[in-house]
Amino acid sequence: MKTKLLSLILFSPMIVFGAGGIDKVNTFMENLSTALYAVGAIVLTIAFMWAGFKIMFQGQTLREVAPVFIGGVLVGSASALAGYIIS
Image (cartoon, rainbow, N blue to C red; front, side, top):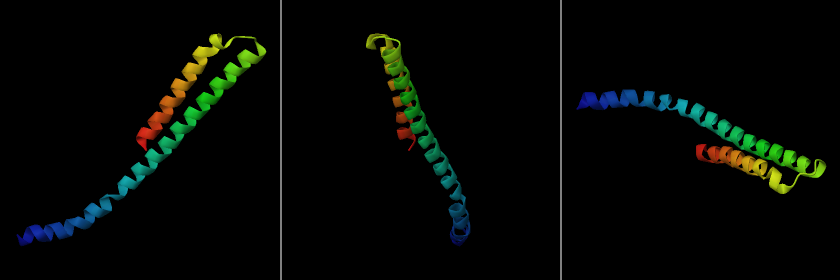
């Protein structure tokens, strides 16, 4: 019984010091989450700008550029949702 208690006391600091790796993982996941949110915003912005350009300057209808709107929303929301799930 004494040896088990002694070994627990001796090895518990090693477990506490080993937990420092979790901070690195948390930092990486936070950075990945931020990057995914940024990618979502960039994709949405580019899709809306492209569709707006097509409507304004090339005379296309909203029906013709609707797939771009839908695709931009799907890709942008998917990356934002992944960022939310990770965080």
